[in-house]
Image (tube, rainbow, N blue to C red; front, side, top):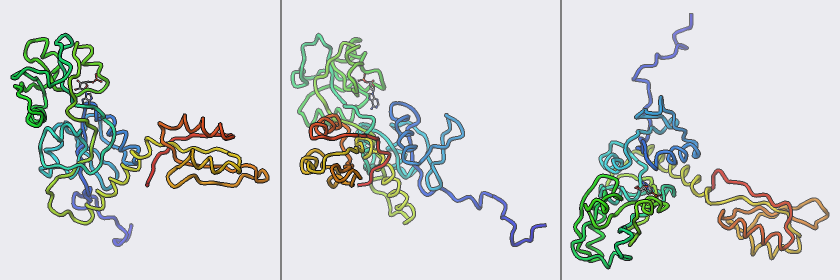
Amino acid sequence: MIPAEFQLEPLTSRTVIPPVLRIALPNKGRLAQDTRELFNDAGLEVRASSDRALKASLGADFEAIFVRAQDIPEFVSDGAADAGVTGLDLIAENRRGVVSRLDLGFGKCRLSMAAREESGVDDFCQLPPRSRVATAFPNITARFCAEAGLDLEIVPISGAAEIAPHLGIADVIVDLVSTGSTLKTNGLREIGTIMQSTAQLVVAENRTAWPAAKETALQELCTALESVTSARGQRYLMANVPRDRLDEVRQVLPGLNGPTVIDVLDGGRHVAVHAVVAASAIYRTIADLKAIGGEGILVTRIERLMR
Ligand code: AMP
């Protein structure tokens, strides 16, 4: 028999430590998959009992709840969740008291006004007064019209705006555009951009002071997510270059703090240079390095980058 002092206390609800931070994540739609991927890459693996679970654990300190992206500003401003991931478009439309703590970079799209191809309208300024605009974003559209001095009649709809001009419900629409293929398929053309949008990590605007542990957890969450989002657009490049051309290498490889230079054991003719380079500039950089005698060029992805 185990002596009393070594016996474990039975696991009861009394002994369960609640997660420090509850985060509302999109349950479906364009942002859901990318959000899960980002949290996984940041080491916060979503561990749910099933694909349709409403709640999941994200490591010891965090708990996820899955709700519709458009409801997330409300969940966060009401305190039902401490933080949330949702689109900037939905934050602007909801007008709930939330603020962005971090731009997560994915879910990139724009909210645009579009007219029928054959309408002859190229710009929203050409719209006749009292033109009707169908949109699931009536608040943003109303603000935009007021600021641009446009006198339009807003027709609120809940989805599939693209069909509205063809049904005679409206003259133009305001909807999200990513590649533009939905507009094209439906014979519509953009006549103005209202706003750009990406997914954001949000918290309540006027939250009462949080306990220190919660503040720390939020800070750690931001650091973990940001280290992944910062790394995504960057590559780690390594190359051997002639030592006597190092000045030219510095022009090609500015890196975060200039390239790291390491001796190569070939009698001092070459050095190895390592640097972080923008993914969009990688082809140019490789060509420039080759032009100054670079060899053995290696480019890898970066998992996390803390500036
Ligand atoms: P696309 O054909 O790529 O321009 O996508 C347009 C359609 O996808 C529209 O029905 C939009 O409502 C929707 N959409 C595009 N991007 C997003 C996004 N980031 N978040 C939510 N819906 C989006």
